[in-house]
Amino acid sequence: MGRGRAKAKQTKVARELKYFSPDTDLSALQRELGGSSAQPRDEADYDDDPYADLADKYADYNDEPDTGRRSTG
Image 1 (cartoon, rainbow, N blue to C red):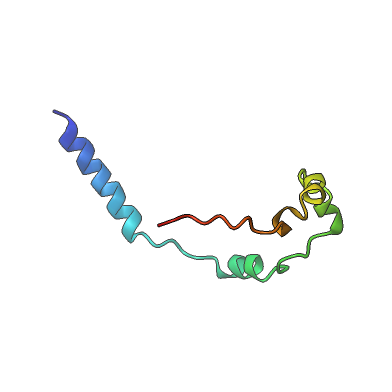
Image 2 (image 1 turned 90 degrees about the vertical axis):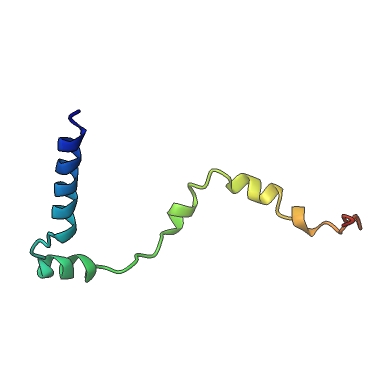
């Protein structure tokens, strides 16, 4: 029975969110976007790869010759 009041409140809130435009702080936006660009990763970041030991183990896995099997369609 109280669904109408709840729906009206949701509609009111949705309308406020849709048409509300807060003041934008353009200087803060410029500082955020104009900051340092993408920073290059250090070599130390690559040392934390948990699969690095597997890369050497399976490095030539895809270099095996094709067995000649093909699916018939």
